[in-house]
Image (tube, rainbow over the protein chains, first blue to last red):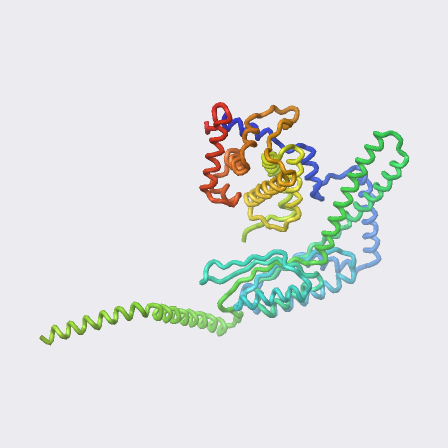
Length: 331
Length: 161
């Protein structure tokens, strides 16, 4: 007997299939499809396609146009880290997405859009910014999903990562508010259209409900015990599927009504405002150098004052030495 | 920036990679198969419920191991059992009855988990100390005492060779 036997013994232990299935059932999307509702799905898909085609024809050009705009807006990427006028950049992008949102929402009321935003923010006053942001989140009816703050040592700048959920209709306002208390250096807003998956889930729920009813009907008429057992087994499967689908739908609803905002917050000693004219650049560089120079003197003064005790001791020793030397020379 | 896995991703990853690991640890720390199965399922339910973000698969695995051991402890406390090895304990059909596994199971909880984590999962004493939240030296002594006990119990001992 040695450890090899033990390893072999443990190797032989594997989770029984029945357990694996039970665990798998915990995770809704991992469930396999059943042929019965596959057909129902196909019918439902055709139905939906017909409806969409119809409304497309009726809606005419306006609808088609707004759908094109939606597609463009799917990944609305803004990189504002360069020095070209940041604030106007942000302003215009919010405006344009605001108007696009307006037209598309009137034409496509039932579309399920999941919006997410990723922001990098610089701030001079880290602490007041963090308290400010927490207030804003509460004020807008959102919540913090996850938050991490880093402070490697006392000298370096702090930074924080936050994942926040904000009610989707207030996302734009929230970002504007953030711009007023900090400086946004990069902003990405992405919209993901989950209408298809949503409709898919809805029709699966309908199909499963129909199957549940049918099974219950058959169960009432069933005579042999094996039939009853078989039917009940299927019924519990259907009900589990149904619960899973309903949970999925709820989670979609949550995703649509709340937008995820990822924040990367960095503390800086000073925020550089962009100005790309010649003199602006000269001024910026000059300011930087002056700042560095100031930094140098500041550090110098700090070190000087900090080393006063040593300087005092050295001074006393030097004074004594000088006095002795003078006395020696006098003789 | 570190990439985190959480929620559904963590679940499906853990399901693919660590179901057996969780089940094995559960079997080490419970009386019978049905308890071990219940614990395994509870661990995965916990994983679905938690909003924790995992740095990498090792972080996830360590978390699963810790949760499994704790859940087993709770279960044992509830059923108020003192020893894990009972006479009724026997392996399911198709598997040999393995004495060495029962010998490991008969060890005190910390010894048996350390033996499992070191010899089967290949963790070092330092890594085990982090998972079980204790000192490295404590882990080393558990390992030694566990090995010692097994040597007495089994013919030929429980040596590395």
